[in-house]
Image (cartoon, rainbow, N blue to C red; front, side, top):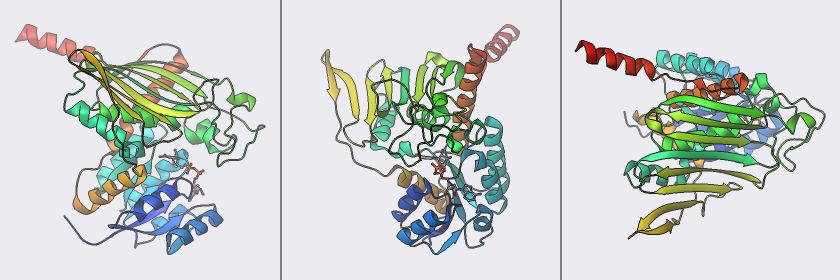
Amino acid sequence: MSDSRKLRVGVIGCGVGQLHLQGFAEDPRADVVAIAGLDEDRCRELAKTFGIPRVYRDYQDLIADPDIEAVTVAVPNILHLPVALAALAAGKHVIVEKPLGRTVDESQQIIDAARRANRVLGVVFNRRGRHDVQLVKREVERGALGEVYHARAFWMRRAGIPGLGTWFTSKQMAGGGPLIDLGIHVLDMAMWMIGNPRPLRVSAATYAALGPKGRGQWIGGRFKVNPGEPYEVEDFATAMIRFEGGLTLQLDASWAAFTGHGDEFGVSLLGSEGGAEIHVHDYAETGTLKLYGELDGVPTVTTPQLQKRHGHGEILRQFTSSVLDGTPMSPSGEEGLERVRLIEAIYRSAEVGHEVIIDDEAPLASAQRAADTTG
Ligand SMILES: NC(=O)c1ccc[n+]([C@@H]2O[C@H](COP(=O)([O-])OP(=O)(O)OC[C@H]3O[C@@H](n4cnc5c(N)ncnc54)[C@H](O)[C@@H]3O)[C@@H](O)[C@H]2O)c1
């Protein structure tokens, strides 16, 4: 159904929720009519800046507002499940900040609830809105890289632990550290660009060398520096994932490590006919992509002239269109679940200290053998 009316949205959470407000402000088909957050001063300030009529403290009150058709969930990870379930039960369409849930079980519950309620569910993987990511995806799709056989995804910070003692550094509230916070972004970039291949196995390790000593905090970031507070999650994670067909992906994520990376993320792809490298320093949006190829046997490097895009705006516009026009939502809830499935397997492998199986291809192979011998 296409429709010229505006979608009436409520934003829950006034931290990164601010980027949701900026995103919707650029969308002529959506109106944010309410926001909610426990930090009332901050929420009121945002409401004033963006001209939002209603401010609630608790998310339950926003969800009870019958004028609201869709909500964005931008609260600490521990609250994604209860907030999303409450919103879906009230008949709202929902888009949840990454990660969809802290675990596969939580993510699956949200997906099941969205199906039952027949409502749109999306996940905010805002980096998909980047021009460099979109160009590489298109190059992969048109076969310009040939067969992609290896990917490397990383997000490394030298000293970027957000808010020691806040929900970010609590295993229970966040579900993990930089892997589930930052690694999931670059994992999604890579997986989306290469067409969501089926992961089979992962071998991983996590470390906490600086965080527990109160080191590596984000000085000048939006959180207070609190050296005495507890630190319960990893500060660095590394993983090697094997996919169906032989493709491999190396993933590294750190909030704090003695490295030359200040705050940098990226994805590189190696293909049989070409390669692509996205390398982003300090959230730059241009000058971040190189494409590698060959011209008459001579190596070439192409550096496309990139446009600046508002990542949250791009994803939220897709959400609006999905609700109003019925177009499929991308990033979907299912993709959100698949990313969490990988994150959970990485933590499991790190805990047991060896490779773990995510999806076993053996049953398929043995079923095929059985079919061959009986047929
Ligand atoms: N996509 C991105 O680039 C990006 C960036 C930062 C954070 N995030 C994600 O967004 C989510 C929020 O992170 P953040 O950095 O904004 O955290 P934050 O701590 O800065 O803000 C959390 C907000 O949730 C509100 N809140 C908490 N409990 C609430 C309740 N019961 N009712 C209403 N509001 C409540 C708080 O008042 C606050 O406004 C997390 O899931 C995080 O992973 C995504």
